[in-house]
Length: 340
Ligand code: KG4
Ligand code: ZN
Image 1 (cartoon, rainbow, N blue to C red):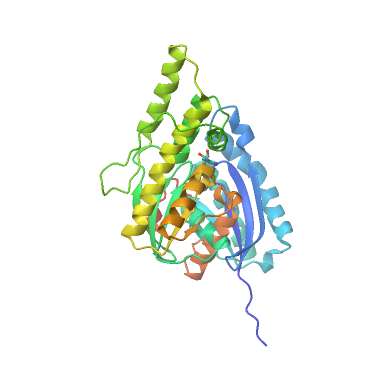
Image 2 (image 1 turned 135 degrees about the vertical axis):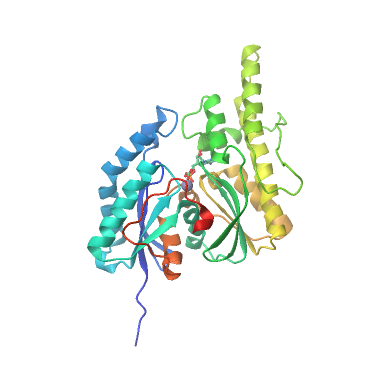
């Protein structure tokens, strides 16, 4: 009797302020997922400080890698490949993961698979369900807001993107004005649940056929409302501001995502990235999906924010497609998704 050997990929992610390593089997089963978050460290600065992030990655990477192997109960020779985020992200942060991945690939004699961070967010969906192609992916994170068309596994085309702020960035900036701690997205989400959409903030739908986004006008409208009230000495209900801001973001994200599904005749809508953890967005997507009979796949909260299981999942897809790199792989801070 022959048994096929499972594909076990060690994923490494250090593009921003999470040092993460994970082992995934056959691209679907998470054997371990370790995430050392630096949010506490950056909180006092109100955002990620790149130099501090790089140093923290160096301090944590060895321990995180050891824990990922130990939790998974695997040894180096049980692994098939090593996948690592090589961009986009903070260059000093990315380099820590890339250097670690190259050193391990060399010493353990394993293939090295470079992964685009956003491809990681998308393929996190494979850990929770069947991805049905062609599909449209809405990627909403701290650095990205994009609509992508995936004809097939490994084939990505950007069909819409933000012209200014990313959705998560808008969340973090507005949260800061409301006096909420970093990262502001989850805090603002919590506050929004206690308020009502009474401010009628602008929704930037842009040109009638556009799949692009713009959040800077909304951000300015919120800032003006808050500063104006403070200057006039008027009381301001922060929960209502949060609810109104969230409603404006969610309306646009949902409308454009479903527009793209229709335009590309997609079989599925996949939603990924840190902002996909947003409860208001998840509820609105579920409601619209039910109404339009569209299948939506969203990873659980722990797989929406940065982690390495998603990098291992994407790495498995790319490994099967033969997309391995040499040991001269470098970090690419502004890596293009379509170059994948
Ligand atoms: O994907 P991610 O962990 O890191 C990047 O690749 O950027 O996304 C982080 C972003 C932050 O801007 C954070 O505030 C936002 O995702 N975020 C949220 C929520 N949870 C995280 N935004 C809105 N609602 C949430 N529940
Ligand atoms: Zn991310």
